[in-house]
Amino acid sequence: MKRRVLHVIYSLYRGGAERVIETQILCGDRRRYEILVCSITGGGDLVDRMSNAGARVFLLGKRRRGDFTAATKLANLINVERVDVLHLHNSPGMFWGTVAQSLCGRRVPIVRTEHNPYLPGSMPRLFRALYPRFTKRARRVICVSEVVRRSFVEAFPALADRFVEIPNGIRVQDYEKLPPRHECRAQFHLAPGERLVGTVGRMSPVKNHKLLIEAFARVHEKAPGANLAIIGEGELRAKLADYAADLGVSEYVSLVRESKKIDYFYGALDVFALSSDSEGMPLTLLEALASGVPVVATEVGGIPEVVESGKTGYLVPKGSAEFLAKRIVELLQDPAKAQAMAIAGRAMVREKFPAEKMVAGIENIYDEVLA
Image (cartoon, rainbow, N blue to C red; front, side, top):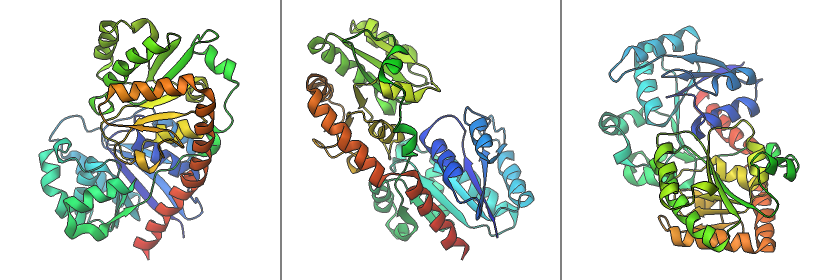
């Protein structure tokens, strides 16, 4: 009998958690599970993609703090759709989904996913206070990396048995046959001999793109033909543009809004750089590696579980523009080393992080809680 799984998440803009749900829709066993998706707020650029992939999408329309009608709307949705499993994402999904489950009058099993390490300062006070009690209501809490799992176990040792690790995965085949390199580079108007360093991620403080721009200013001194492109939306766009101008590199730095041609972006890159201060298991890092791009990334969160420094990429200390720049320059100036790392990185992602492996692990959890 086909069971209905309702994913509950704060929004449906192009973030890592949202794209994990999309991957599950695309790769899941449709003979056994029907996927429904509920955004607590409104729509986003993934609504149409999820609908086209076969999921039914619901928008609760929560617009202001303290609007508790979202809980009653969600409880009604659970009952009307006769949901079999609630899959809640991050702390907003935990809060609204758990409250709705208590209101709906049905003992629908709860599965949750934590996409980032436990950082109490980043969680609203109410969510932080309720976290232990609400986690007792969950049958399993999936963590996207071992570092994420360990951070929650250390914070809530009495609940250790709830937390399990299922690493993120991607559809590797989507990144193994990129468009021809000259076509990819033409999208960014790169002249022969110019090199491109790039990253993908929301322009928010935790991604620390300011550090990447600072590192790039150092890179440009050693490799004058280098350019930097950052793809993403976010509240820091204007400040990052001003910072590039202050460092005298704005001519070589592009802040690109979200692009549907992300494969062209990876195909144009010489180095993928990740400067984050915190990460769970970044999909963009997996995508770059699967695309055959050498990577340099800060040694935070689940990144060391992906990158073996010196073999599949380079790890650098968090917050160090000096080391970030040094490793980027090294890869730009040593194409043979960059190519060897790219080959090793692609093989590693194909073996360890395919979407099918992630989805099978999640569906095993559903089987367990429904047994």
